[in-house]
Length: 337
Ligand SMILES: Cc1cc2nc3c(=O)[nH]c(=O)nc-3n(C[C@H](O)[C@H](O)[C@H](O)COP(=O)(O)OP(=O)(O)OC[C@H]3O[C@@H](n4cnc5c(N)ncnc54)[C@H](O)[C@@H]3O)c2cc1C
Image 1 (cartoon, helix red, strand yellow):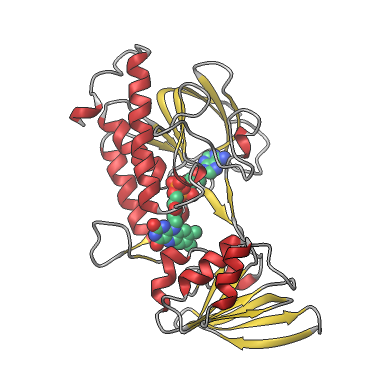
Image 2 (image 1 turned 90 degrees about the horizontal axis):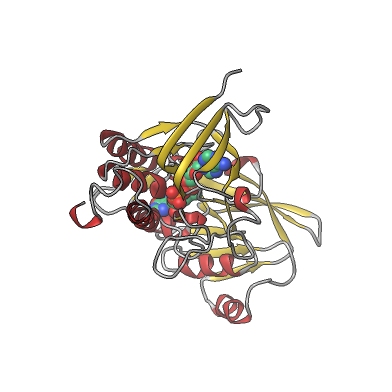
């Protein structure tokens, strides 16, 4: 099989809100960026339904439709998008080299990309339990009553009873946040004590709207496309009893994993794997490599914040190219974008 070789001043890894915003800015600066799509073209929002908190869409917009708009806008200004799974990177010298395969399971490298600057926007993945009902619609009820983001979806559960799964700080935060909307929050935890910080546990245990179901595991989720979630199957691992528990929403809150394995040992990251950037910038510890979006942000994890940091990464990359006198790179300065 032949190998495709591509060289670009700006290469953006990931096509979620962060990557495509970086592409809009870099392409409007006439840097002809290349976006590498990877396993989830359009990113995490393509597996959800209504997005009601992205500014500019007064009536809300479906996640896949929003990402299509991002994509069209980036392409309109000259962004090229390729669908390749990046398997290996060499950041030891500039230009950097990225090795791509046609899919995650493929053996052969089919694309080699050389990049003067690299913007990493590989996002993060919510951890899931792996039960059938949580799969995205249409296979399961993911995005239709099952969520991994209370900030994103809590609003849809006004006056409804919901179940939250988890025992760490993420679960405590999600459960407390959801009390603003839900009629009742049942916190399902498989052990007899939480891993969360003491203060968060105290807040949860004192909250009148939250009930904790200890030693309990979520085994399945029932419902339909039309009705959403109707009930869940719970298993008490102390009594070995299985029960059907009525509810109208399920939030899986067992943490997130940034998609940064590729950069382990090369780029600075925290204990969980979130890429570390310098001060107010999106610069990583390697000159010419920038990180943005959920791969770099463990705290806000929203489409609009990912887009914001994508913009910042593109401006940082453009300034880097101008400072390093890469031809044509200084044509547009950030001030006249
Ligand atoms: C179900 C759900 C609902 C949500 N609802 C909302 C909401 O209503 N409002 C809101 O603001 N936020 C919402 N979010 C959060 C929002 O989707 C994320 O904050 C946002 O998508 C992060 O953008 P990103 O560009 O950093 O990464 P992502 O959107 O995660 O995109 C990552 C990109 O990197 C690519 N990639 C990863 N690894 C590789 C690789 N090795 N090679 C090539 N490419 C790779 C992927 O294919 C993908 O294109 C929701 C999230 C989920 C899961």
